[in-house]
Amino acid sequence: GAVVSQHPSRVICKSGTSVKIECRSLDFQATTMFWYRQFPKKSLMLMATSNEGSKATYEQGVEKDKFLINHASLTLSTLTVTSAHPEDSSFYICSARDFRSGSYNEQFFGPGTRLTVL
Amino acid sequence: GESVGLHLPTLSVQEGDNSIINCAYSNSASDYFIWYKQESGKGPQFIIDIRSNMDKRQGQRVTVLLNKTVKHLSLQIAATQPGDSAVYFCAVRGAGSYQLTFGKGTKLSVIP
Image (cartoon, rainbow over all chains, first blue to last red; front, side):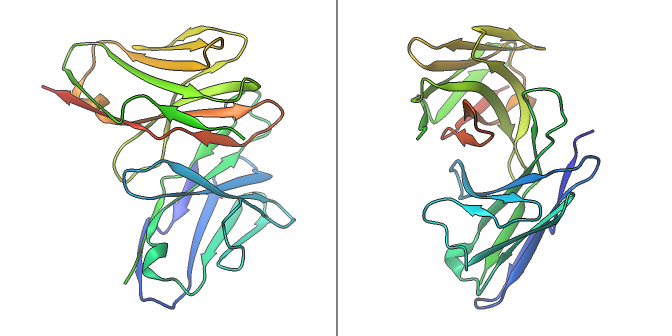
C-alpha cells in the first residue's frame, strides 16, 4: 500500500513552454501533498505544500506564479512549470501524506520527474 | 527553522564492512527522524525511522541511533552490500508539523 506515482517520469521541453507534472496517490487519499525540487548532487528542497481544495502554501523564495499547484482531488496534485527556462531544469519529486496511516511515517514519495528545458 | 547537515558528503566502504552515516540537526523540538535511500534517478525510499522518545531502533541490517543531547542522528548498515550503494538522506520533522527537512545527503559507495 501507500504508493505514489508521478507522470511523466521525464520530460524535455523548449524554453518558454509550460509543463505539467502529475502526482497521484494510488491506494490512499491524500489531503496534503508536497512538492520538492532536487538539483544534481543536492538535497530535496521543499517548494510547496498542497492541500486539497485550497491554495498551496509556498516556501520562501518559490515563485507561486511560476510554479502553479492544483490539488483538485484527494488523489491528484499537479505542478505546472510555466514559461520554463533552462534554470528550471531539475528533478521534481512529490510526496503524499496519508493522514490515516496510523504511524508516524505518513509521507510517501513518488519516483520523481526529470525536467530538462532546452 | 530547522537546518539539517551531514558530516560527510561521501563514504566508501568494502563489501561486508559496516557503514555509519551521520546527521546533525538544529531544532531541539524535532520529534521524528527518518532515513531515506535514494538511487540515481529515483525518489527517496524509506529505510527506518525513530521518534524522539527513543534512542535506538533496529531494522533488518540497519540501526538508527538518536542522541538528543547533541542533536545527532546516525544510520548504521551492517554487512554492507553493493546494493546499498546510493545517497542516504536524513529527514527531520518538527513537533506539531508534518513537513520534513532533509539533510544534504551522503553518497555511499560499496567496493566489491
